[in-house]
Length: 176
Image (cartoon, helix red, strand yellow):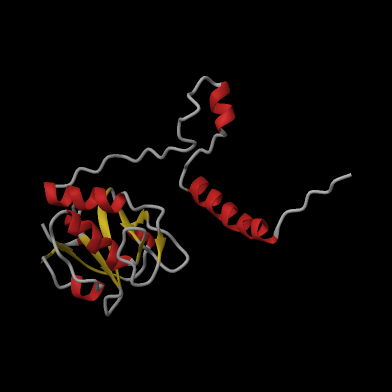
């Protein structure tokens, strides 16, 4: 009789796989095995998971490019001092997104909080930068409907969340 054992290397990936599945499930992603898709008549090459997000309508082209770029980074890991394209910290994400729109930002949330023009919380538009803490220590990008996209903290990933879910709101700035 042959006994099959799982190698330690393979066992060590199981918690990471479970965490990834939990993250996807909490984001509303439905995971369907490819065999089930094939049985249902879907092509075998179809992706196993799809996230449908409501489209964001920014007030101008540059803001739209920045918002779309930031949203496309969802699921990528937070790494302190990360500025893309595979890992980000909060200011690295906003710097990367606005660079795609042709706007250079420093890699510092505190310095970014001095750029552009101040915006009242009630007047936020998609593409506005939102700053937290005093002194400023975190930045996210407003995407509309009370939501923002940001790189939250070590051990987390770029994601959208409610602006109200973050404590310490300080100010917002409009760059374009």
